[in-house]
Image (cartoon, rainbow, N blue to C red; front, top):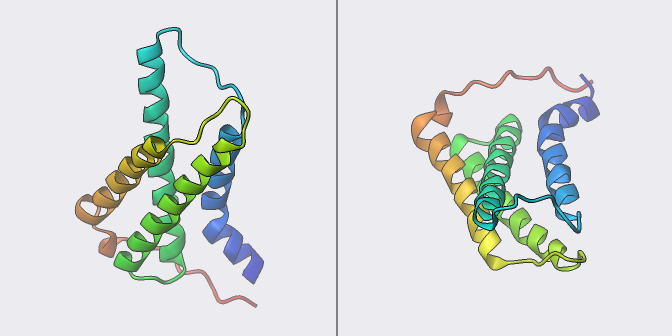
Amino acid sequence: MSKIQRHIYQWGPALLWMAAIFWFSSRPNLPGLPNSLADLILKKGLHMTAYAILAWLLHRSLRMQGLTPRQALLGAIIIAMCYAGSDEWHQYFVPHRHGQAMDVLIDSVGITTTALLLHFHWRPQRWRFRRLPPAQ
């Protein structure tokens, strides 16, 4: 497996997910539910879920880079939270959208939930990632 293939395998899913988040954030008008409370709950729930998935994918990528479970978890949290902040800043420049600090906090709940699940429930130190053959 070449170095490029290795990096795509390791980082591709996380980068594709980040691109999907960016794409949805750049839409001026997202469809909504007629009930404003249900719409708010749905959208904030999707925020938390999107960033929970991002944290998991980043953790996967960092573990495949050879980081310890703790290092990968901390790295995933930091990268995902920075991306959440940059995403809200990005929305500030999108017509009809508003970057909100509250959304970063909601994203952080999803990130933290994933981090806690990885740390306490699934025990990342037991995870075995398939070692890729050396790059040629």
